Image (cartoon, rainbow over all chains, first blue to last red; front, side):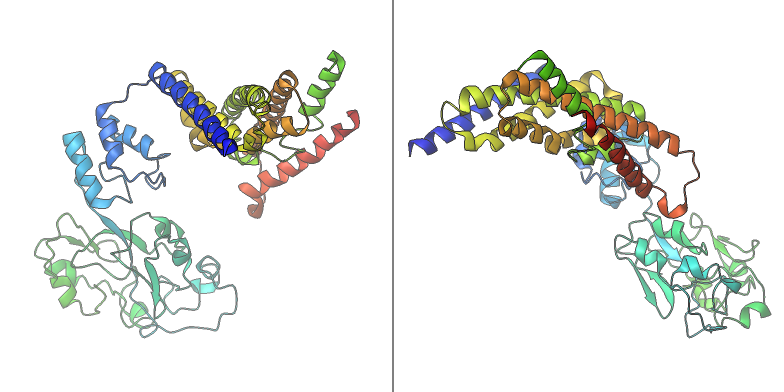
Length: 261
Length: 193
């Protein structure tokens, strides 16, 4: 019994000594922290994941107070955190927009065909190097080997009938898939909008229709029809300006190729 | 222990029995913070402070408190407490006076707590029956060995940054290869024991 008591007293007194020592040290070496920085640090998730590009939540909090980072810099916290931060740092922040990744290809295996049989390594990076950018009839479209799936830490991407699809709810906009895709067809779009152009084929007319039943032929109907003038078709394929887009969905309903989703 | 024996202990601890390259303790921060020479040197300095003080305080506690009360079996938990407290202290000190180094070390600074070199030396002192003074000197020599190793490593990594490294070896693999070659080179010092 006395042995246990001794041990407990021993550990307890060492702990007490250490605690008092550190308590005094923290008074002596106290560093003044900006109150805003402290408040923001409380709001941030504290996972220190580094997805914002800073070395941790402390560093992001400091950058936010200095006005270097936008209020929505925290990828994990999303809108809830961004709005609270905006409240603290006031007018210094940008408008908070939640973005998600979007695969600009609708040409799944029902709409395209394979030109030849491929028996090499099954990664998009390898397939992008073979003749015509892979066996798929459209050399601009999604290869469907899932390099983006392997990069995604949130399980937001699936392959559906040979084309990668991003789940808007799960996507946290870390941009890893965007940087991985060898075809460069994954883009950042605002969350929960009515229309996204689902094709990035810059060709016109026949070369498109021969290879994909759903590919954009750059007819420009969507651009002409848009009541808000938000679609620009001058670059080979249409691009929506989401600042102007009013989410009417007319382009989606009237597209003769059904490639606006 | 005579003076010459002490010197021999110091030299062999730094070179032949180098803590990282021969005993393979404290590898985490050795690979983690060796990108830049200044940061690596800062880490070496922080570890030297913690290790020397930890081996002294642990030696005092062990010989003057734990042994008289026959509580030797409590040494691990007591040593861990001491090491953790010292690391906290170093963290506060750096945060106040060397802010840039504090930020450069990042997560590796609190991780000194679990750096097995620190606890390892405290326990080795007990295992090898060193008294307080010899134990402290052994701790200091171990830390200097760590410092030497991490600074050489950081220097090599800075040099390598501009080299044309084959793609499969880029990043961490080449660092592991470098560490292995350094370790082999340090085995050459085994002859002076």
